[in-house]
Image 1 (tube, rainbow, N blue to C red):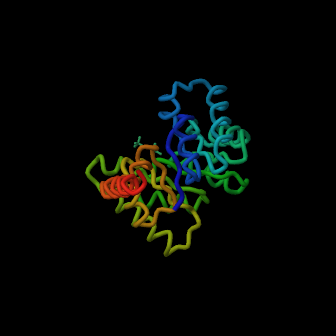
Image 2: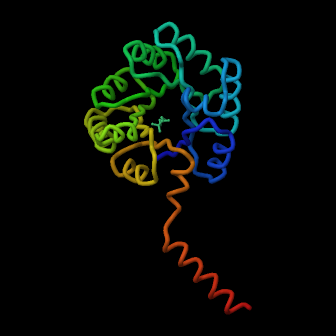
Length: 218
Ligand code: G3P
């Protein structure tokens, strides 16, 4: 399973990259806004900076919601760097645009996915990645992980190439459950990634090993 970091914060991206386990980055307009990045020029130059920090795929989201606008914007974003993936919302015009990008060799990430039906449409259109938002499904008392499992089952039966990118990950437990249920990629904040490190027995064990070493080597 690949690890993407879900942020537009350059320090977090560098920190995740320096762990040596980072495969890519996802962003969205809310994450760009959180970093105070506004205006087309600044947004595009920020994507350039991100794409230079990591060699893996970097999802850059379009704002347009009509076919012509999405294609125009997507072409501009894809021209920023070879590792830019155009992130397109799961709407009718988005599906048309994903088909167009697929036919024209531009990678896509279909975002705001909440059902297996939507996942089928995105795969048929040739999306490179599919982003089911598992945390937001959990937020409304449904089961985000079941959604990942259902999509993984459909994709396996049908032999679709689209990669399942579990998004809206909120915790280390989400990461493990996504891995168990067939996600190809998880995208999460650095905090959830670092949360995987934690186990009290690791801390207790290390403390004991170091104490014993100090006793024998005082
Ligand atoms: O990748 C999509 C993700 O950023 C959404 O996460 O926590 O806003 O639901 P969240």
